[in-house]
Image (cartoon, rainbow, N blue to C red; front, side, top):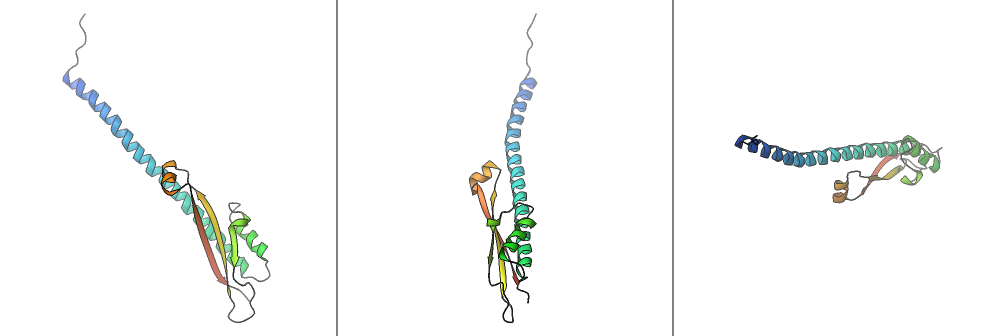
Length: 140
């Protein structure tokens, strides 16, 4: 019985299969890096929009003199659906209107965003601090 002989075409096909696997490994790495980076970016935009909205809700509450500072902070936490804690919100400015025009009050919300993509977190750091603030004029 004779052995099976490989032709030149068989050798070329085998080399192309190895090349295709190497190209796929490189392309898949780049693809997944971009995909997970986009996921982190999407999460960051979502969280920033959430804290900006919470800051606006806090400022809307802060301009009404009948509410206390703890009411304002509670409104910030409640508007974030439990995502923020009471230590994330600060209130600055006078909340009483004794002269015309009334002063403005600013509610600032600070939150730490944690990245989940390891390679990106190695480049920019494991976490990013996001800050959003809203300023409104106190009502009479």
